[in-house]
Image 1 (cartoon, one colour):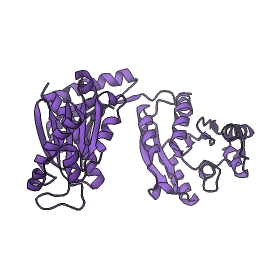
Image 2 (cartoon, rainbow, N blue to C red):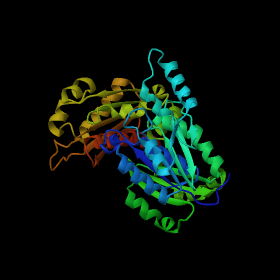
Image 3 (cartoon, helix red, strand yellow):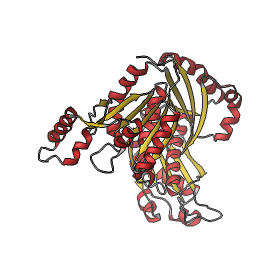
Image 4 (tube, rainbow, N blue to C red):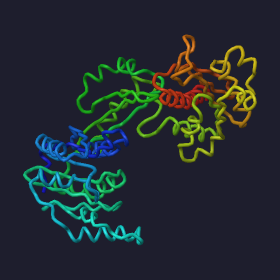
Length: 423
């Protein structure tokens, strides 16, 4: 059955009071939006509703009235708070029916992994399925998803745990949508990440391209530590969409020479690792205000043990002196948060680890400790190597955690920049 001629609109409805209370991050919306848009579906609304039957009913009725496909996540478990299927059935005007085959699947899953447990009576709720719905097997858990197409509207229920939701969507929902609606085209996005130019200046440089955009489109996002430029095109298939993106990507590269650091999924730490491996060089760190985060970013990359030797966490001044050899006179004259201290920390790390390159961070993460001369967010980042020592002064915005993240990411970038400028 192919209904692909019509542009299909999608609303995502995530259920659970824990989302509204901020107890957990809503990973499901991000994943589903990315996947559906890539498949050519237009996700036009995202709604979160708590475990309240009346509000859930209102949300589902509104969603089904204004879109073609409504996908819910959460509320398919065995407890009384898991009410999504019940409310969904009422809205779609169907009954819930007990499915023995589903119950057997649930039983087999539990017995295989927990043979010592007896099934509880409320686990029968997971085998209650909206009449006429297709069961979407859950290969990562007990609660199956369901898909009910009625009156030109499609209501899909997915489990809430992210791993289970992804499994059901990838292996059951995608083939189901293809079978029901046919191909909706393909949306492809390419990303460029810029670490040393502000969003306003980037926009000013490419504004004429932004104004002329249609397909592909250009968008900019300020991330923590960098600006991301996204190019997105929609076409009949992946190859055609990529062909639309490529000329625009080349235009942007010519407008923004030497500032685009990484593309698509590659992080700045991955780019640094790639360069270090190619050149056969090693790197180490000396961290004060970032508390080990620079080393953490670098070691997030598989294979980083080939080039990363370690990072000394020297938070207190006496440790800077005893471990890194920072001069007590430097600390007395210039304080720990200074260009001079950052330089000595980087040189000390290089000596300590016998590395080719070393990077240091020292600053005021905040929110306390700042002064008019040295405000919260002030961070000095030093890089030492065969071509001498450079120190960069930054004043980062945000709270304590954000300052640390920005400083650590910029430290990794400065090492990459140092290598590109001297080799």
